[in-house]
Structures are given as C-alpha cells and as structure tokens.
Length: 180
Image (cartoon, rainbow, N blue to C red):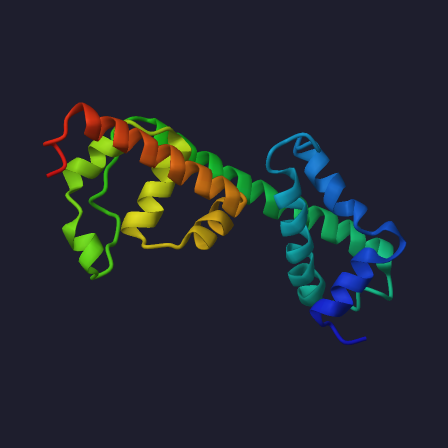
C-alpha cells in the first residue's frame, strides 16, 4: 500500500482508529470543552499522516501494533506542543519583554516602530495580545500564520487585534500627543 496522506486519512477514519487522537488528548487532560480541543484534533489528523508515513513497517499489516505506536507518538507530539506553548506564555507573563534577540526583517514598518513605544503597548496587553503584537510587528506574520503558530482560529486572532486597537485608541485619547 502506498503511504500517501490520503492512505493515512483513510486508515485513520476506518474502524474507529481516529479514537487514538481523542485518547492521546484525554491522556493529556484535554477535554471537549477546552478552547483548544477542536484545533488539537485537527492537528492530530495532520500529525498522524507524518507518523503513518515514517513508520518503519507497513502499518496495515499489523494495525494494532501500529496504532499503539501512533498513539504514543501523538501523545508525545501533543505534549511537546503544549509544553512549548506554556514556556512561551510563561516567558511573556514574567514581566519585562526583551526584544533585543528578536530578528527583524528589513522592512519599512519594522524600521519605523519605536521599541520603547512597543514595550509600552506590550505592558498594556495580556499574554495572548503580546504574542500577537510580537508576531505581527517583529516577525511580520499574517493573521493566518499567527493562528497556525498558536493553534487558535483566525477569528481569535482578529479578536486579539480588535482588543489591542481598542486599548491603543483609549490610550491615545487620554494622551493625544504621545503618538505624534
């Protein structure tokens, strides 16, 4: 059997095999009512393709053995993603934001941003909004790229952007000469 993405999806969809994704998430304590649940399920389908293609033997010959392997691999990959996300959140919530190591593209927008002003904005934002500002301004990521990076929907990204805009507009109305 050829190991295409289509073959992996068909294998996963057959005979309730997709339950290994839910099981791996359950093992991590992620339930259906968690905000990231649906995004992680979708991510699990994509991760499964890579696991299916890299498995050293033919997955369909011994499906139980392969599913046990795939379950463990999914669990570990989800765990790595969640730990990386937690490290990033912890880093952003610890207060002072060090932007000196953040690479900047040579771009007019990036060159015109005043770092002190940006740090002031970051101080008024929650962790998610800070991630958005850093990714949008310094890394020049699109909303779609940011949503994929953080495992949230684009709608969530636009909500973050709207809240940031509201905060900045309120700040500007309090001190109109600060942004000129």
